[in-house]
Length: 434
Image 1 (spheres, rainbow, N blue to C red):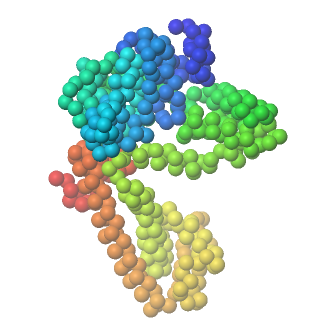
Image 2: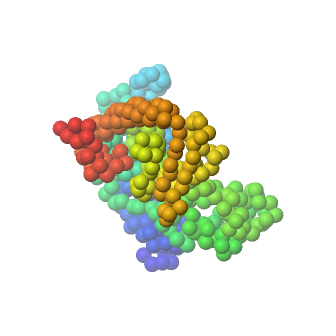
Image 3: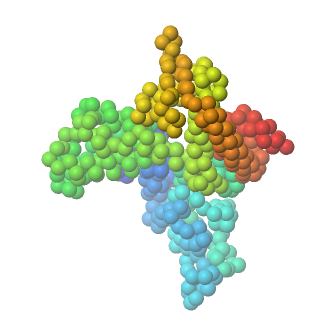
């Protein structure tokens, strides 16, 4: 297929862009379309995977038959089997007591079904889908009579199905049956100059919709847009252009400063990417994920306590401050009397900086002796309780990760967000080697 033919496909299906990865995905869709092979489309959420399913259907011999798109993640898992394969009357609570119902596979006989978010499908439905793919048979819920259908299946997912297989969430045989021809749709940040092309296309669409002059970007704004990591991909870019088109009024030339006002901050963007990675850890609750984050913060607090402890007990002197990453922050705290964290002591304390030190690496604290001894005991008592509490929770998370991954330590380490070497050390520490 030459370049002009690919451009015709893009124009027909409303696809904007010229990146090699995008062109390769389109070429694969065109090549597989005339066959009856199952196709698995992979890519992040918001990349436009459904457009490729439409290319496959419209360029196939089934183009005059029905095309049905179903988002498996949006259908309640308790009813998805019935939605896809139908049910007999009164077959379950909520089913019609008088009429049987056809499912999508029966309705779309001779056509194409697009199953988006296939990784969200439950085990029973996966088993029946595999049967459909292998011999064209399915059974309605509440029935024992097999029915025949001739449907082509195009599936899509934004999750790692191979990892889902390892975690027992997806059938391996179904994965290989679906992915006869895999198609990868690239993320927007991997498409280079396509970002500017899409911005201009959306700006034109919203200009017509809102009957306002079309937006344009200055060169510095184009550079900002090009370097932004769109976690929501094309969907996020479209919403961004929609927002600017509506709110900017008469200002239709957007510079870098103005564009940054509409872009989420880097921290928000990072949080979105982090949360999307946590979504795959289905066996970990939000509370446990938060604990894993808080555990990292707790180590800084423990480090702070050890630093204060050394200052108070070990001759009131801190040696080798490079061993304490938060030393400079503490130095700032002590130098600023308004933010002094030791204001519970008497005011006869003194802070003496060694002027001969190149890095200001000595702090001396001189509280009263009786208060110093009590403060040390409080730190030791609190530190011991904190360590015991954290160690118990950490041990619990490690055991849960090992059970979830059937004692595969490499996979357990990935779920816990630590290296395999660290996991082995923790197993020895908590006597979990066996």
